[in-house]
Image (cartoon, rainbow over all chains, first blue to last red; front, top):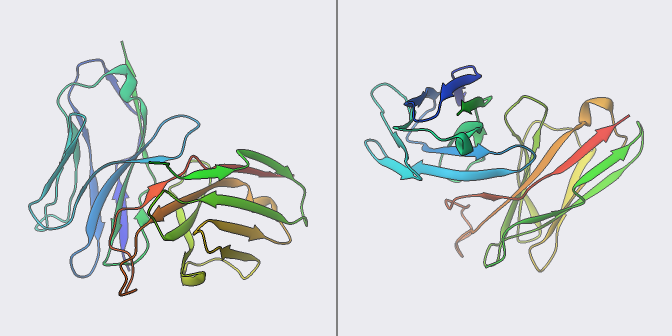
Length: 111
Length: 118
């Protein structure tokens, strides 16, 4: 079946460090891929998305490239800030189907 | 543009009780999806509503039911609450095209309702 696997957290970084959160997926066909972010005590916010192979989603300094050959959608940011501390969820959707989420990766950024 | 809103924000119930959670979709959206997020887990799809009918359901028992109203707002009802129903319940809205073949548009989430069952 369709599934998403994320690297386990927490990921702990100092401010201005480089961030990578790994995400791989299993799906038939060509799913759309998403990264959502959840700040403490809040719901999910869409961070970025990509709908076809080799697309790059970007927002607020975060980037992720849809790699079909490696079935991956890793999230990267060149210089993290304390305000980026949150839980990050990778998700996929095939066509008009439901969103399927990974288990989330907690990011902690220290000054 | 008004975002997705949910009420209440927090709720405490006891086993066996019933609960109703409410969601108002984002302006211009006609489809509502509900997700359950247990502590430390990713959200799990419960069901989706479009044109006031259920349009897809996840692996949840029938005691989870819903409604959608003509203004596209929605309710999630859970009967015979169990301890494991304690979770954050998220509502997401999106736009389904007039052809009604489903929503390919991005889902936007509300802040959630945190339910604690004692």
